[in-house]
Length: 215
Ligand SMILES: Nc1ncnc2c1ncn2[C@@H]1O[C@H](COP(=O)(O)OP(=O)(O)OP(=O)(O)O)[C@@H](O)[C@H]1O
Ligand SMILES: [Mg+2]
Image (cartoon, rainbow, N blue to C red):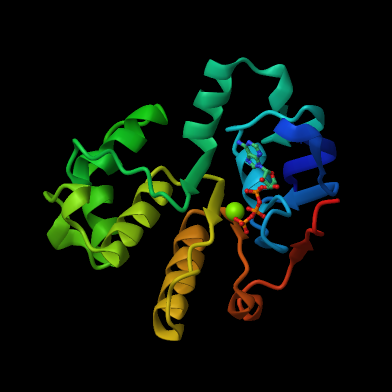
């Protein structure tokens, strides 16, 4: 195993003099982890730092052995497109593009050749292949979430980051969603990191980082 993600001495300052101190953390390739803690404890911030969407005010975050603070914004964007699949609470599908083209765009941004066979196969696995020509705004919440899982994994990333993917779901749909995330992560050998309040996920992923209420 080798290190995929590392946090050391990370602190993030927000307006109002609030400072979040995050625990040191190492994630090995292929390892999965839950980030748990009360509202405001920094779960979403930790995912954003891991994916290079935010840069730490103090300390270091490294992804794929590259220290993110040493990279320029464009380099971080490229690294993220190549290595990371994101499933955030607002799904950020591109509304002007249909479902298939949303996946094709992710491949293009990752520097890959657009592979329509892979796109169709993945949408079929997630049971949304019939929606390939639909625009995101016309999908139900559950359909859009499946498309977001497909978009996050179509590039075979090393790291999949998901923010509260099961928060509003009943037990049956929670089980479906976590099983899809785990099977897609496994298919590309990716690590899955989920920020969540959802205690149900503990039976699927054993490693947990527990954040405290900020002081
Ligand atoms: N852009 C921002 N500007 C100011 N403060 C922020 C910003 N983003 C986050 N914070 C603050 O940082 C702290 C951590 O926020 P974060 O969203 O990471 O928490 P969380 O654990 O994901 O919470 P929740 O469970 O409610 O999603 C909170 O106190 C929040 O108010
Ligand atoms: Mg959050």
